[in-house]
Length: 315
Image (cartoon, rainbow, N blue to C red; front, top):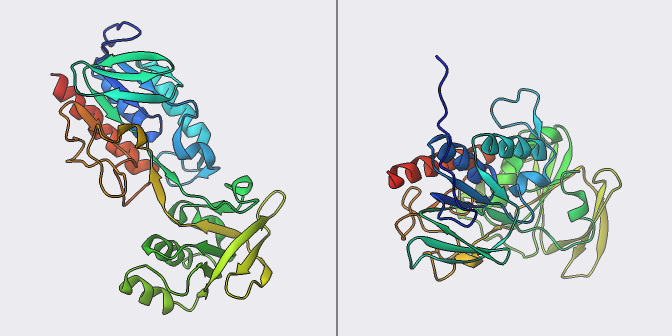
């Protein structure tokens, strides 16, 4: 028997909405699918640049249900359409303030104030890219920040990893399963990664290390062709051909607007107990609290949890 969808209750354009979702990546849009299907009036404040990091990717091969892969922007457009189909309202505006000291909560965006009985923070985390010329232009064209996502595209290819922490070590080790050669480029003369990770990397015959080195420029037309790398001790600059470059210098959670309103950890991620924050009625999902996985599918899973927890909170 076909499941009957109960339409969400109509809401005043400025609220109070049953839930306002801040962010529009896989976490926020999945949460909206659940809240609207649960008959909660739902407003998504998706940002002027909406869709999260998948809008910067090309083919996504590790999201379930797409055996031939799916383009990142296409996946996000489909998720948005699905949320809107069930009654979510979407506004591509940036949130500039929140007030969680009063009920209903108030959220400032686009010169307006929206009120909400509950909030889901799903603003994600931004990859810290390099400032070197050519790198941003070649994102998705040989330059990536996610080896588990993109390593299979570099089978028998020569790739580089920039970074010196555990994330960089993990990226390099993942890439060795596919690439013919992996070079870690690090600006210092020692890694900051854990001893165990360093030992594993240094023992892998596929991995080379360029110490005291920095990427000065990424070169390529349709795709990455080579890197200009400077030795910051000698000043020498070398051009080295590479098929891929993986940036692993960290992420920055998009939480500036929540500072002083919601508890954040030492790295700026939202502190959480499951999907709950320290403020009752304010929930969190996705990369904005996830320091470990940072995958589209895990973000969607967190969004599902947050959506269901909001419905329980609303009663």
